[in-house]
Image (tube, rainbow, N blue to C red; front, side, top):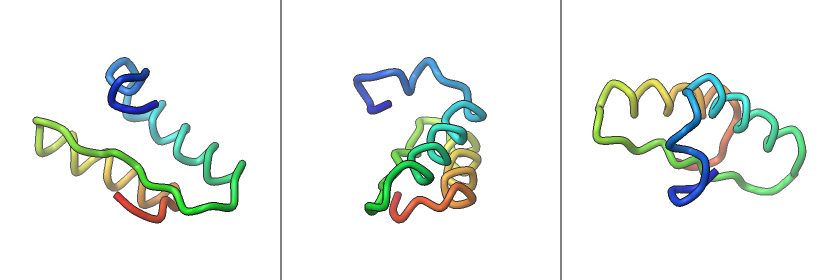
Length: 57
C-alpha cells in the first residue's frame, strides 16, 4: 500500500495489520511509509510500524 495505492484509504489499524503481515511473510528489510500532514497521525502510525517490526521508516 504505497502513496499511490491503498494507504490513503486504510485506517491505522489496517496499516498496522499490513506491516505485521508483511513482516511475517518475508525475510527482507521492510521500510514503512508513516509520513502525514498530521503530526499526531504520523507519530501514531510510526509507533504501529515499530511495534510490527519494520526495519526503516
